[in-house]
Image 1 (tube, one colour):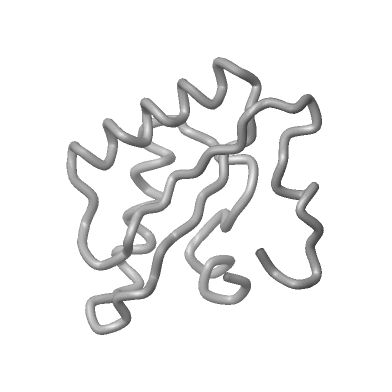
Image 2: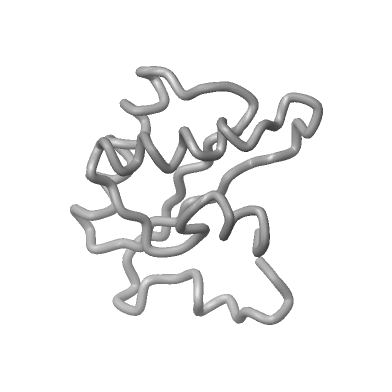
Length: 96
């Protein structure tokens, strides 16, 4: 959470759940990532929750921009939309 945001920005207004998809851009995604994304998305949407995209970039030695782009490509291919978090590679690199 950034200091300029309140905790209520992260919680659903109806008291539902807040969940996240948190891929790591240290390699291209695989079928297990896609399966996890789909299950998390379906669970969150089934209870009218808020879904966050949090890209974990702690492994800077293996970080590559094409791995971040791959995350957005996979989400688009699967038809999954997140409510919070970066919306594209440049948004991630500039704001997160």
